[in-house]
View 1 (cartoon, helix red, strand yellow):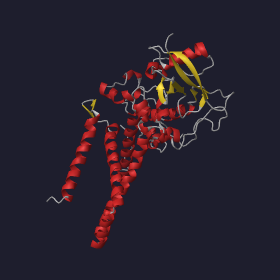
View 2 (view 1 turned 90 degrees about the vertical axis):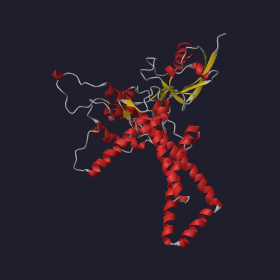
View 3 (view 1 turned 30 degrees about the horizontal axis):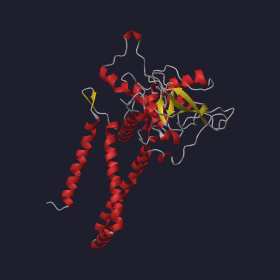
View 4 (view 1 turned 60 degrees about the vertical axis):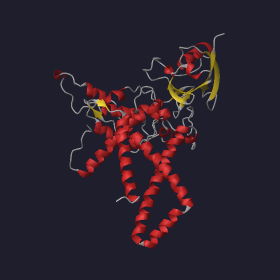
Length: 251
Length: 139
């Protein structure tokens, strides 16, 4: 008989139970299977009522973030064999309200993300006739790492501050703000600084570094936040020394 | 983000787990992190100690002798050794984190992390050596 591994999957069926429970499933331990494959196997063959999010199964869409043995992971990139002989405990992302089984409620994050304006802000768009906005490889390099974020929310599930203070805007949102601040085409740094220089913005961060450790795309949100702190501090000193000066746009 | 979180508080269906006050005891990593945060108290302690030393010196020999005898108490020595360990832990973790907060670029490339951390250690050692030379009576 082929080798199998036990998956202990968190179940929460709000119409039946008041709090989550665990259900064990025996799934084939194939070398090329990731945790997401095992969940799909459960849904197809063992229990069709299991709910979870997934889409691309190749580390791009950011939907399948879950806790695997207590660590936030992209389940599409987490091989079963790494946990042999098991069992593997699969839970919904920590610190988020659970909607059902492995599905969490992320509206709050979407709202926080929007607050930092994660798009290119221009004071004035140049006419199309003038052509595109050019960018050198160095300019691209300065924000590329932060642009790799796929909003999988593993960093939120890793960050103790997110767990303790639900107002904290969180690692991914700040890293994405920094992605646009560092973009040579963007002029919105000042608007973002107004949101992020508040206590619930960058100053909520205690530089625990967990976000960077768990990030499946090596975005380094912790680095982004600390760089932002230095930036905010310099801006503040500048406004103190030269209150008459025009606030720079953060370039 | 002063406005309340976007999800409805006390929503009857969603399950929400409260974070335990003891969350930092669950993993060695979190415990080390809290130790690092606590180590700032040791930094404050040494600053206060230095201020007290200066104050005693200013008040004359009697006060200074009092300070010295207090410092020689075995309990105080033990406490100071522990505080020193915390301060060293604080400094080392701080220097190691410096490259994260300061990505220095040269010729379009980001400097490797150790090149940002190393100067901190060098300056630290040099200043410590100068202070030690003063205290140990070099002229």
